[in-house]
Image (tube, rainbow, N blue to C red; front, side, top):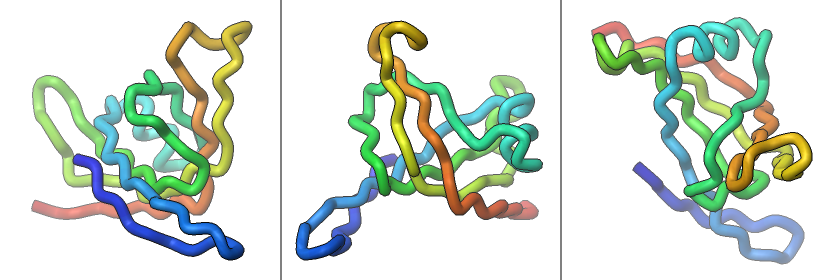
Length: 102
């Protein structure tokens, strides 16, 4: 799901996109406890600095757990020397844990 909002930054109009990303439990747990504050992703969503990212814990057997992490993209690295073609490293900031009990 992609949701867009319009925000103003220093006289420039910028359309912020919200990206909801499935995240496997092993990687989600590291983000939940802040030992990992980045994401490695295929850049098939045109990620931009300032976009909102919601990491949603998901496993193939159990589906979504109800836990999520809200954050914003603070930097994007896409150097082909370090990452496979078409992939990016997203720096995440302002991470907030969200736990929904079903």
